Image (cartoon, rainbow, N blue to C red; front, side, top):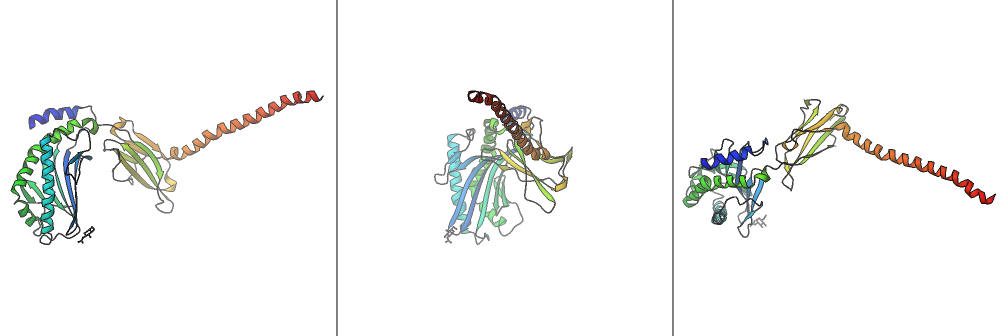
Length: 340
Ligand SMILES: *[C@@H]1O[C@H](CO)[C@@H](O)[C@H](O)[C@H]1NC(C)=O
């Protein structure tokens, strides 16, 4: 395994000296989530993720994997894909039956939500760590390690009894162990290589300013919007001179439909103290050329637009008047002549 990793890492890490090219850990994971509404109603789905990017979906009816990117298959062979589809289908059915049957014993209260997260993570040093976790209502209860399930919390009601039951699934646990230690690391490296161009693509952000809802008397909420960038790491702050404004608040970084990212950064200020404030955006795609958006320029720009439209308009009108006047001067004698 190590043999495989080192040359590939070298390729990944030297691919351009882009600062964000996998210098942090990156994982591939499959998330299975299942919502139990009542004793007879369950809704489940699988999705596959490479870092923040969704790469796979499952068609619940056919049980088939849907590959969302041209490179989502990585190096998976046909048989491996089929095995994965069958395993996931069986797991989903078994888990539903088991949880419905033992809901009262394990004190699972309807409606509830469970999640299985399986995957592996590549660390900058080249190590790959696999994981498989089971969560109930968003909190991890169990994890899989060395071929068996372990409790993640001290919990005699759910974690311990569930762990004992899960460990009785010998065949499934053997398959899980193989997938985690062999299939996942192999697949992760291959998909990172196959999707490299997509993952490392640099898309420049667009930024604009607005004022948000009035936060209080005499105050103003300034909003800096930054959208359409890739990759996800970004630095956006409200500044005055070289001073970062400490009250800068940031929204989460939200996905756009096209795989790029969007974010808002807020500053709540005294309405009289907005002068000199600007929004600074740093992003790997900008190649050191930060975006600076000045509040005055922004507000002033409307004035400039008006001026840009008004000046030619005034000049044109003046010209029209002058021409008319001149023309009537010239014409009058011509008109008058026949009368004379
Ligand atoms: C279970 O929940 C579903 C969805 O909310 C509902 O349509 C159905 O009638 C419920 N069934 C029972 C037996 O309560």
